[in-house]
Amino acid sequence: FLEGTWKSACTSISSDNSTYAERLDVFKNTSYTYYEHQYSDSACSTDYASKRYTYTMAVGSDATMADGATTATKITLTSVGVYITPKTDALVATMNSNSTCSATDWAKDVEKDVSSKSTEATCLDEDDAMGTVYKRVMKVVGTDLWTGVGTSATDSEGYATEIEDTGHDKQ
Image (tube, rainbow, N blue to C red):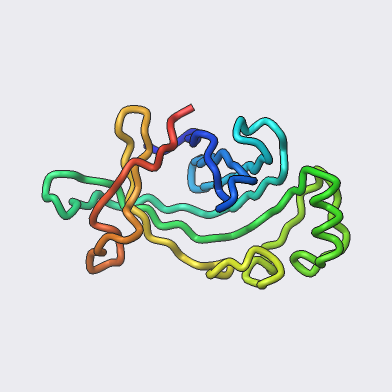
């Protein structure tokens, strides 16, 4: 039911509005890939960097949400990879001088696998390492992708009991 690509609008991702992003969710069979394409302008036309997160996916049973009327499907995601692609010479220079993700060989438009470094403070400072399992509830409403509210209560298995529109539309 999720098969395909879902895309967000261009939105600011930095407090000073210097970085913007378009996000894509790509579901194919038992894999899920999340892309964050970053830009230095509000039209999302001037490339800055890209991040790609890969997961294995298992589709479970339907779950009834807290309102008693809405259903969504339980999804289990397991993180398997994280990749970064710098898109400007200036960003490459900064990443190399800072040894971002413990690397000094960053190159423009060349994707680097940082899966084993993603939790490092000098990398992405992610909270979770590879192999982490995430429990989600998802639903397709027309051309909109809905998912569990991060702050909602969870059921006995750890799945959210409320869902909301992600802002990602079917492409």
